[in-house]
Amino acid sequence: MSVTLIILAVVVALAGWLIAMYNGLIKLKNRVKEAWSDIDVQLKRRYDLIPNLVETVKGYAKHESETLENVIKARNEAMATQKTGDAKEQAQAENALSSTLKSIFALAESYPDLKANQNFLELQRELTDTEDKIQASRRFYNGNVRDFNTKIETFPTNIFAGMLHFKKFEFFEIGDEKQRENVKVKF
Image 1 (cartoon, rainbow, N blue to C red):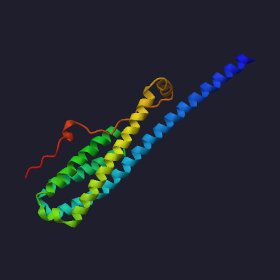
Image 2: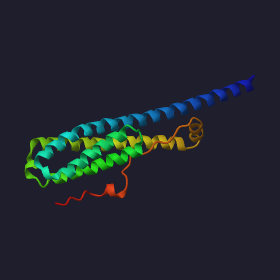
Image 3: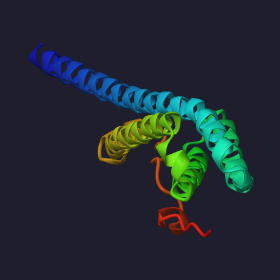
Image 4: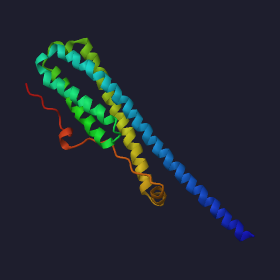
């Protein structure tokens, strides 16, 4: 009778361990999804601010239409990639958008009236605040991706995660070296 109890205790302990492992994986997966949602919220805010910023700059820098068109094009491409759900593709589009936004702020340096415009200054402040929040959201997302990926790659969870088809998440990273460089503005 005691052998049966020992076997039963081992089976119950093993089942409990598997349940705890599964619940841990689901918890981490949901944290990654929540973090991605935080990025989406901040990106939406940035998308909404950009047209106002472009309109404000248009009034002062009429012959800089190429720069403004590049910003709108990058915004539209970033919004389109948001619908795909591909983190790597979206990260590249968002990094391109960030680069074009830097060019607008660099452009403002050549237009003293624009730099002094209260509407432009407020939009610039809001966009800077949003960029800071996007960076914080990216760090939060990448931290959760790191935790989840580590969990599904370590033994013995990797065996269980593989059987249940848990897949690694992609980090939200800066793309190529070109995107790491400062924007060069020529007048």
